[in-house]
Image (tube, rainbow, N blue to C red; front, top):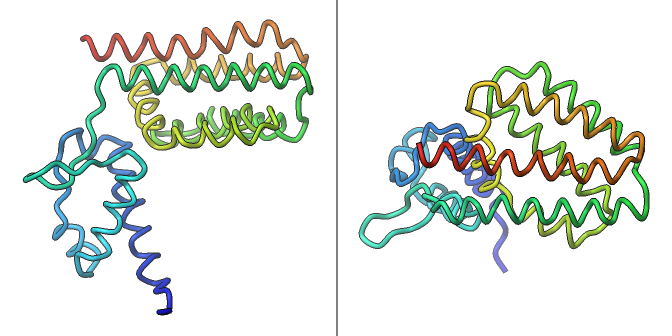
Length: 216
């Protein structure tokens, strides 16, 4: 059996991370072609690590290969975007049901507070989107369900891409910060009934915001 080339794998991952950031931040638009030789020149490498990076992004749902065109940034349909957000909503509701039975986790609650403080000072939409995802992942982890956690993780980068789009609207980050503070307060008081209502509205507002953006 041949030795694993860790340098090659690391380079492929670095290129994949670079392209991912370009997609999430909107530098690469839906339907835009990924030019292999451009990335190869930028990283001073052959096309092989670039192809591997694109393969990784295709498995993550950020890139798709189109016959006679090559690899392009995946363009989600309106229904696919709604499905992503509805599945997220469903999984968070399932997590809430589990938390009602087992109670809150003080360690994860502290982590949510720390993330909330960072959210108040972050200076760009991409960074805020990442913090927001980590915040909601704490809620998922609090369910103590590996199944729910695994399913939520599978939404991955496509969900982050949609959320990033939502937060580009003026005032949405400020609104989100206020709502996350309420979520923390309700978790601290273990007022799970009110929290379920607040969380449902929080997620529905994201869906409504995306609908407005797509139809404008």
